[in-house]
Image (cartoon, rainbow, N blue to C red; front, side):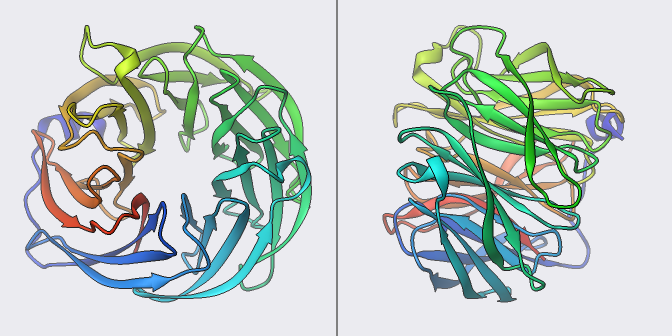
Length: 365
């Protein structure tokens, strides 16, 4: 499939489909409900949904019935009532050593007990909370609080292909962590920590291929996409090689790479970098991968329309390999990028210049 993507160009659908997304806000207490028409290639704002707080990261549960969010010092859940309506269910404070830190990332377990994992960044200590959910998927209570080591600052999580391991990208601690997940309780137990291959790599986000053989890590400090092998027995990580996310000769100090996501069919990977300066663009890139998850080639490295600000977060469509959403906080917009297999381009932009936009986006269809 990955070879076909490199050779064939997509064409616009004959029948239009309306896709719906939710977008987080860094500094305003609401979420945006957005609609994308994949035939007319237009974006429209459906609703500004008032929330309990500004939410820096948002994620969906396995059935897309609940939206989980981070705030400065709490975790929240919202029931999805319609494509432009949410109902607040629960807000939980940070527990254990997490108190006093910044809630930065959430990841939900796609099988029973559907546990939610949250991590913090900064403060006294980087910490994780394991949160149970009720029968409707709402956050219920914190069942475990676990610590990383002194100097850690975990910024991203990924769950293993069999839903039995949790991987943590430790940006400040320049390392990656592996925890096992208890199949009955959802609680975690430390297994392994490995340092990044070079000083200042600063792993930021991580994702795992569904075949379970490889993990992909964004190195924020050295602006690279790193490929890790997952040991078939221990499920721990081992570094293999990396690929650039900024052009050759560009200074790493001027950029900070951000996000990594698999495409809908898992045939390729989207990755982004941001610029520290508004006068320089960030970059968006894609890599073709084999059926088992090995990286075959870098398909393109294209400038984004702005630096990205704090965002340049990519969210691939959940129904097609053709589209990916990208959010920007420098000017405040969400864009849809299209990859045809032959070229990539921006096909729709929705400006939301209200001082809060935009954190990451999720597709709800």
